[in-house]
Length: 301
Image (tube, rainbow, N blue to C red):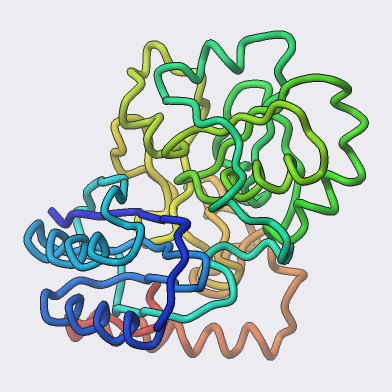
């Protein structure tokens, strides 16, 4: 089994190219794969490897300024869920496109997973899912508001159009690992919201700590690696991925007439041209050849 660690930390970082090189070197030396994003506002990413490999990378991250108290979510994978290691420099570690939002200095109230049910069951609280629409499709908290956004960049606009709906209610937000709702809580406070809460550690921490018999979570949680989804106890789910549009697909989706492995699904058949699908078919052919040789093609993600 491989250890999968999902992490983020909002903290001022400098000398990003030096940090990038150091993290890439430590990860590659220890056989760790995945993606880490670095920006002046902090670090974000998911990595996988052996226990000792993950510990080596986490130790290096905790040596960064402001990261000594780094928290992360761990789960397991039966196969390595990533093909390579990437350490990338970005403008934001989660892209919202709002330069005045600063979670380092202003953020909502953290709510522990074991206190979350009580909060979101109150009549004076509205619960908002800050994830993308395709993530919400396979699982969410009961009665949560789905903004139906295709990317996190769309969230500020959605809030501006819809904030009047929520009157004077308290706002509780959640996301996969905590980073998007943390940044969204900072944004809402800047926009004048009075009381804003967010789930500490995100859905992943909730599914890890809250027993299924007490849970208000319904469905699976989408994750950005080859496991595609996880369930309570962070067990691997049953969803696969459409390698054309990167959306999760179920076994029922695979019997739809528009499904072609690696090429299209019912949701994206109309989104691509026939020339696109020909490229996807060639990629799928290369993926199959690589699997037959006992290796993995770069497109097999």
